[in-house]
Length: 501
Image (cartoon, rainbow, N blue to C red; front, side, top):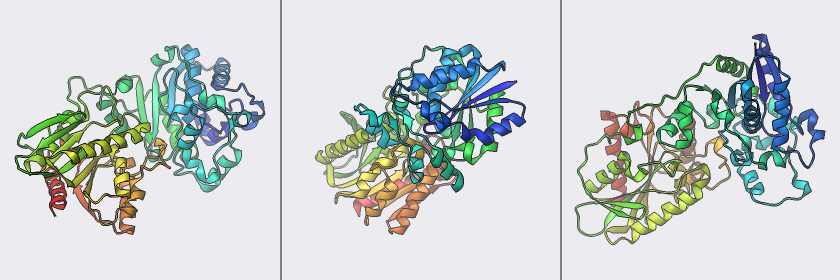
């Protein structure tokens, strides 16, 4: 018999597992929905010293009193922190750890680091608080999305979630997680909620970019499932979640294979055969220069991310960006590629500053016509277009975006930030926008593109769509098809047309 220990996220308690627990018990499993100290009907037990270690000890006691030979312990959102802490103390009892729409905290990480609510992170990080701040109040009914997408949760259930929510002891979010390393050898399953911005395709893409922290995900003991719902699957799709947990306990799930010797997708050749043009490096910026006299217009290509700072080669040397830069130079404009500081989701401000500095450098170059500049954004770099759309300078003749993220994903914690192109486009005026859209886009990204297009239509922004039939995210080095080549040529031709018009 398998025993499931179910641990909920911040402000919540064991009641949210009611339907999931019932279905697991119907399968013959033993189920222990846990209410941690200070939560639910144990909220009166919270004191000044209630912290992450308190919750870890809660779970250690539960594990010690389970008789079943196999324990599958499930951590949702914040709950993964005490789950990992307890599993690290009792690794011999744990058959599998399930990260339910939860992050991958490491040793010494406080839970606050992964809290989706940006305002809460900023309020608590590195500041001193009095007694009144020892317990963090739950969000109001209309702000639960700060902790993740509420897609699929019925209105009455969401109202109950809000009504029964308890203040979260501050120490549970700020105390660092301490791990000995014993937990690293345990089988693990990630359950990803697509409507909250997670997917298997996204995981595989990040692993392919070479982030060393994610190489552990290629271990055959690690599996993945997807649920097409928001951050609260125990409330929105309890039957599907119960089935996934049973399959996870049985060792099923998608594996992210380590492709030994295979060239990563982003390092494969560019889909067009372009002439070799002169390339000049200035700091973090590369200029791809045309064979032409006098100042020429420039196209600045802004890569996506996050990209780990140790990834090599860096984005400006990836074949796709070199290909775009050289192709633009072969057609008479200056192609500009750069490396910016988008190494994590909290780095958008730094990356925006890097892009602005690169644009200033390019405009000051005597070989560039500083009054004719286009900015072209890719993938997660799409959010960086927001500043330019919100207040386009007169020298910005065009903004382009290719398979972009155009609104923060729900689990990115950027909901109230300035990086919302889907909102900024309302201020773009008559600025031409060239948007390349791939047919096989990841669902969580496609939603943001549709949100952007709806807003653009409402404000009558000048958006030209370039579609790539059967195209994938990163198609320039994946889909060497005639349609993909036509899309690149069309998009580049449109951008250059706006620069010369």
